[in-house]
Length: 594
Image 1: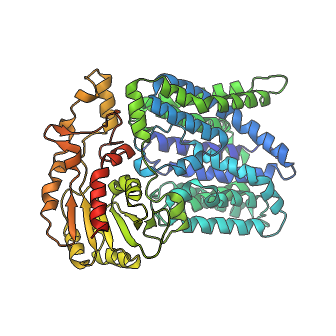
Image 2 (image 1 turned 90 degrees about the vertical axis):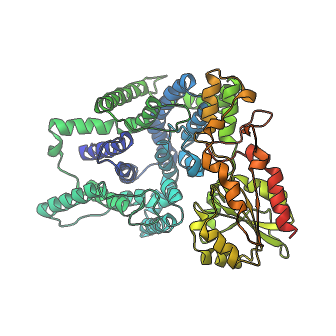
């Protein structure tokens, strides 16, 4: 295939859209759709360039195209991380780098818990799309074989599209990150190669191109909600579909090359030539520029001058990366360098985080442990995908008929104690878990209906609610044959506790045993006991957590080994949940013995 400037311009537009979205340029709020365009372009190019190629030759060529720049990028920012990051953030960085090298970044990020990620530093988050592409490349030779069989690729595209449509309604995050729900975008790019617009006139072609450009641009303007489960407003949904179709049409119709002979066209083509390197470099660079410990991943740039300066740096680093990749070793420009560096990185990254943690200060070790000392969020994504219609999940090791069915019910705070509840209950009951962001905003009839369906006879409640709601009182009145025990809310702080501890101890403010954080407690959280103890119902008992975490001198937030009880301002670590073993046991014993 002869060089096509229109494809490079399409790449330039796609990477600029993504770049504008990450920087926070006004009007680029749908810039992430540029990735969908990249997927279509990839499918189109693979279907055009590699019609007759052996699998091993294909893998070699794709490796040499992707990995040299990827390795250079990872090396640059891991080295930067050694000098800049806290030990727990360096640990996160190296695990992300390792996932990126293995081509599984999308799976790694999918497996993380979005709800509790604002404190995570994820400079290689953009590599999720590279993971999807690498996984597509792994199956491409098989898809190429199937393309010779009529209707097979269209069938697979329809299956993938349908799967994406259904999955989006269950788990938008899974639909976003995983290849099976993205495969249709690549396949449409592949299939359009063999589609012929027979007999189309020059005038009709121009009209088709114009309409495609208009709808392509509209897709970037119509609002998309990343967390929406509606195909019309979610992602990948209607907007992604429009991007995929219009990109495919534009690639097939091929805009006249003379349109790109102006200075703007030439610049766009050059930008397209660097689009892969720009995509790799821009996100970690923005994340490092905006880096602050415990502040998560920030890529937005507020000032125009700063944004322009960063764009120049991204362009320069991309050119440097290209130059490094052109170094010749033993007559081969990339292969030896890529393989040797790749193997070295894989061997180096695994123990690096452990070495960093071992060599870090006591303060860093304590805060690092707190950040990671948590359980799998809710019931886990695999359970959600396999049981999309199930409101509750069974957290007992097994279900046994004849035992009481106990329900742990609440918000994300209940999530923090589910492992301890499971352990304490043991084989005495079947333990179900039901978590809602605002559990008592549900209709009482809906709660009762689900409890009846699962034959729930015992309920332990744990939420962040600081006062009884009318819905709770109504539930107690209508479920007279069910025993309820509420484990009170834990003390809440006004700031991320690991961050606060790190700041104060780094500034030399005494030590753990003398550090007083009472002034950071949220006042309303200290009044929860009086309000819930006033609830009068024969089937309801309230057990305070303050009796076990607080006394007249204040509230404890760490154990004797200086392990923190919180991984943010109000969610317990596993260590914190174990500190509540006595009140949790009291709650469960009262339920199971009643």
